[in-house]
Length: 129
Image (cartoon, rainbow, N blue to C red; front, side, top):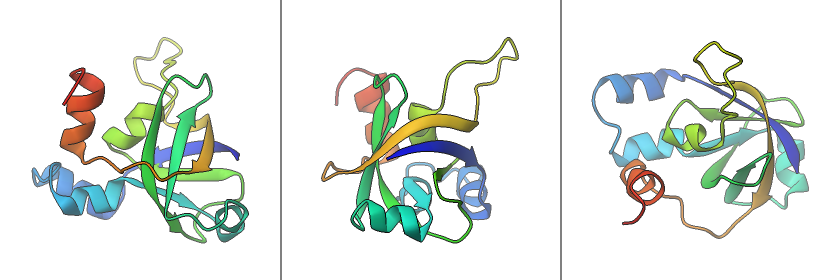
């Protein structure tokens, strides 16, 4: 499924991040999640997890799914976090800030493991585990 990715803070994400709990299970549960509408969720076969991939196919991340009426068809939302940063469109248009809203992505069901924030850092940013 092609979708537009939007990111942003949630109250719980902010509480956990500001409280220094980015490596906690609660942070993973709150932020390693792709919110989508019921229609898109059902069209994907009601998966527990999805893989979100950048437009160029170079970066992807597995996250859990969450069905909500807060997201329109064809759009997905991932709370502002390391998981979202993997698939956010990096172009800054000379502003120094990437495009956190409206990044084109592909969303598909997956059986891949959802990594913790620490595992994402070690695997994707440090080149191993």
